[in-house]
Length: 399
Image (cartoon, rainbow, N blue to C red; front, top):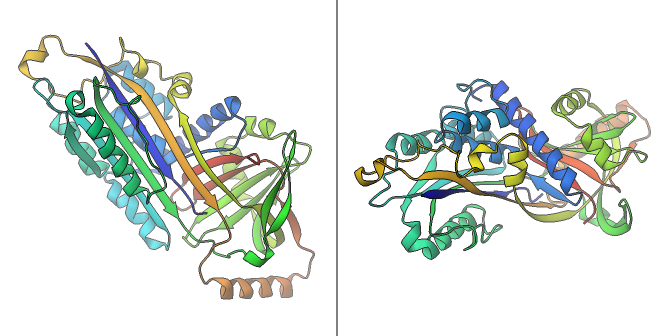
């Protein structure tokens, strides 16, 4: 008998490693996935590379053989021992230095009945390394109540921003495991925008023009301009965490820019940033996004984990005696990814520091400010420079 494994990734972002090599691998994976989604979907969307990577790492620990190798390869982890921090609690503590609200939560809902006995080594690993909540359930008999429990868990851990991550179409009687990952991040701009300066302006999409509310601020910003794009850094209060906006030049199509966008371009551009007085205009926007990652992950070299005949997830369970002779086979059936983002003017009482910085810039360098007007489609990245984590990666196309 063939059973199903489901992975649900629920990510909420902004109201607004073991080694660095590991994080580089996850970042490269995230950018590659982002480009594949863009190729099929030119609308506004956002993913969380760090969330997807850690969810796949949880799955990897239950896999063997070719299934294991393909997950490892998709994540760009050539060394199987190159893993995340020994304890994600330590990873979370890295963000306690800041004023942000940043939470990563993991849970597994695993079948436990007369045939299935969860592998305690795997369960303990998820608990200790990923700080995961483990629930022993019976999908066959209690499917509807489990759906409700999972949705309640996600709703609670994302502060009500994501509801109904799973449905009856996702979880069926023959489901044997659901892996849930959620990220919630909320931070204030280091230099908040003045709501009185927000006004209605035109956003120039590829085939039409939209009227959107644009925030405006004149301040000292880090930026970098090439012949193809203009990069702007907007820092949050959290040390080292910023939003980076890549605005293609007027004669550069967004899809063309994304096709050439890679991790090397991302890091080299950030290394080239310099501070100048700038007059910045960026649109306010809110996004709820949902996508099935199954086809994209298969296209990235992971066909075996989704193949009912060939997938090997033998490390999830120790089967009871009556099932050992003909143990059920398992495969990944669903990979759902949901994101939420809300960009607005809000910030903390950092205006005094802003005034000081502006004063210092204008007094030392009495030059005309550069203009950064994000009035056309752009790419944005929420990036933790200190820990080398691409937390969120998206494109905004006006709607």
